[in-house]
Image 1: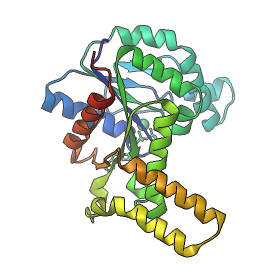
Image 2 (image 1 turned 180 degrees about the horizontal axis):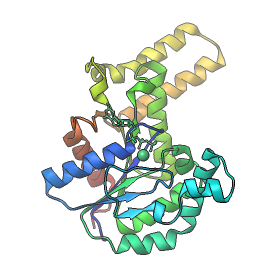
Image 3 (image 1 turned 180 degrees about the vertical axis):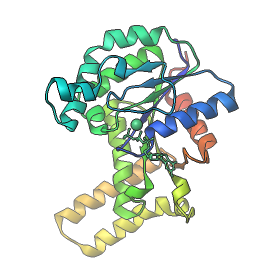
Image 4 (image 1 turned 120 degrees about the vertical axis):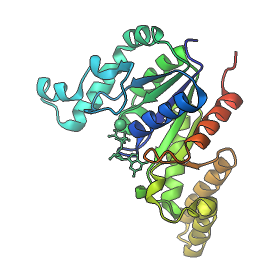
Length: 255
Ligand SMILES: Nc1nc2c(ncn2[C@@H]2O[C@H](COP(=O)(O)OP(=O)(O)OP(=O)(O)O)[C@@H](O)[C@H]2O)c(=O)[nH]1
Ligand SMILES: [Mg+2]
């Protein structure tokens, strides 16, 4: 394989995938002395903080489709990602020519078009032809860190892992915005709190389902560690790299 590892950033709009791509890429170059190549798979992005070695916009631009096909912004994003995936053979040829140790992959802002449409798995297959891949599911603390908010963020990381068949680590970005850093110590406890609350509410079958949901997440939490990082200040990037590396070494193809 051309690269040792591909780190694929996935997550909700604005959670910091692009900023983290740059921050972790630079951290790896500086601290691990490895060569990093950047892949932008977002056809809708206007400005990138890193210089991509492969840029989806050289194949299709969401903005052009709005004019050419008269699509709205969301329709154009969905269509551009689908069109991009149709060019898998071209993308592979271009990725195979790249040189480096680590591939950093930045995915579309509208993450559902990558996770749930066939384009995501198709594009990931291309990535996997040049490097074994590990996913980083980026959440944003402004979306919430407590109770059901934490549970839903974790669930999305698990859903991403299952849907894309990609070993994925959940990461909380923008930790510089959080004053009380102790929340990380209680993050795991939040789930048991939610369960207790649900049991107290006792809304019949809904409570049973929700309790089962939390129990599933508790099981998931036994196999993952959540790290908190900041693309802005750089805190936690060492831990993120370590976690990605551990995940790769445990699950990845080392041959
Ligand atoms: N305070 C703070 N802001 C951040 C951090 N990471 C990203 N941001 C800000 O969050 C906003 C979105 O960041 P992006 O990196 O574009 O996020 P994204 O997930 O790539 O966004 P889309 O691709 O549009 O979905 C920008 O204003 C960033 O400056 C961080 O660690 N801390
Ligand atoms: Mg982005």
